[in-house]
Length: 427
Image 1 (cartoon, rainbow, N blue to C red):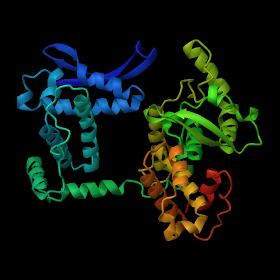
Image 2: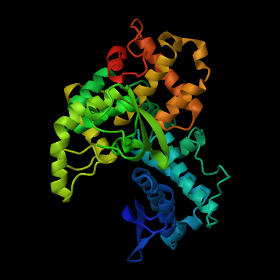
Image 3: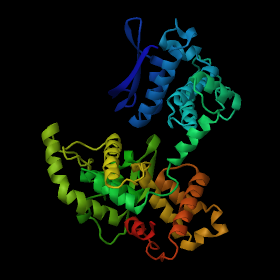
Image 4: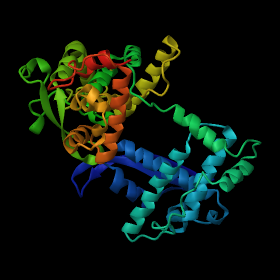
């Protein structure tokens, strides 16, 4: 197996006159360290707008290339030419190989679904090659790259390769266990309070609560400003904003560099002001100035207790640490809880409000309401009307059924107060 690595690269793009940052892939081959031009051009073109996406794509392409390097026919092929010789069969065999390793280790991860989705990411790379008239042995229109893990012959083959005396249903069993660890409902009130109280830095507590009230992604949250400009020039610390408004419009750049306008409730801005800006921001901004040699830009609000701007990766790491502390406090704290689950409460409560509480249990609630679906999709940044609508219809019904007997006036107003509703609804 050849040594393939990936790392970030930041530079000034003269074509767009902007600073860009994305991951690049390198390979040690023939006593030389080589930049793999073709996948790096792909990463530049497709992932420079999101460092998280760039890392995911670079990781999976690197894993696939490492697998190719173990195949005898790639022994004398330069890694920079792997894309030319790779075939649909190689992508399928890579999926089978990952299942073999999973069965050998008897691990729940990666699940069959993850293995398939990862293969799709690699296939996108080959699709890009085809669209740009670059040579490749992978045929995009053929489905021969898919490994069917429901086929008993393939399961038996994996069992044999893994050299494990286990039932041929092992993969299905592992997948079933893996699915059991996925959240089927909303993160509960108890787990929310436990997780929030476990964050060692209050900035993450405020980010969590702000996400609950806005359904923003971590990558969107960290870019929320201390003071906005342009279309967001009305965004200020809440003490300086119009107290007669219950909601404020906010324009953000989301996933895929797509711009959208969302609703920010006044109570969420008030929470930020009381729990972070007035108590933490000033001293953290001073630490920023000391660390970086200049004033903290007004475009940056969320800083760690060391004066470092919070990034999405830091939110994930802080949440994982807080989860360990929460589990030490309460053994039944759900390990499946993640920061991203904050996005589910706002749309679920909006769905309940739209259907007047118990009305969500009626059959006609299943009829797609385009106006409601558009509101949900815009706030969440989704593109699929039906999937988004049905997902939060199910969650809303679960919540109402689990909370029968309470009144719905608590959320039935112009602005859903997510914090109050969680206290009232969460079983």
